[in-house]
Amino acid sequence: SITEGQVVPQHLLGSPYQIEVVPASTNPAACETEFPTAVTAGEEFNITIRSFDAYSNPTSHSVDKFVCFLEGGDGELFVRENNNVFSVSKNRTKAGVQSLAIRHRTTKTHIKGSPFLLQVNPASPSAVRSRQSVNGAIGKRKINVESSSITTLEITVVPFDEYGNSLL
Image 1: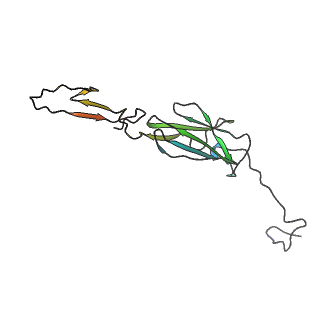
Image 2 (image 1 turned 180 degrees about the vertical axis):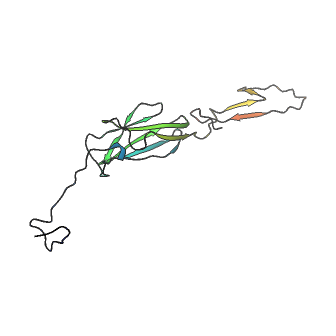
Image 3 (image 1 turned 30 degrees about the vertical axis):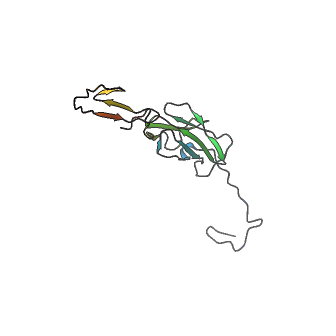
């Protein structure tokens, strides 16, 4: 007879046993997300999700789907890359802090940390979109100056990127 805590000197009949741990259903609160916290307007960036159950086991259930909602945009479905990794590529053109919400499509539950904040920085200045003023006159292309006088011109340039975001 064997009592609790006693070491068994040999394997039990049929051992060692093969035990398969099957993950529970995906728990959105246990999922992990990767994405840059700051991006440049007009540049593509990736958002990646790794799905897990409540016990930190990777999940690969066929019913798992995730949806990404960026401020001012429609929901977009993530693509499954492999068993428990999902990704989506996004592009934002409006500079500023934007809300990024990611939800499990079936349960409509936010994943851990969602909604997130995403900083979209303006792109490089664009000569076409930037605005200038000469002596306070915005956008004037021709300034009349008498040739016999000394004139000081004050030129101000307000830089904008190609998406219309101010760089000031």
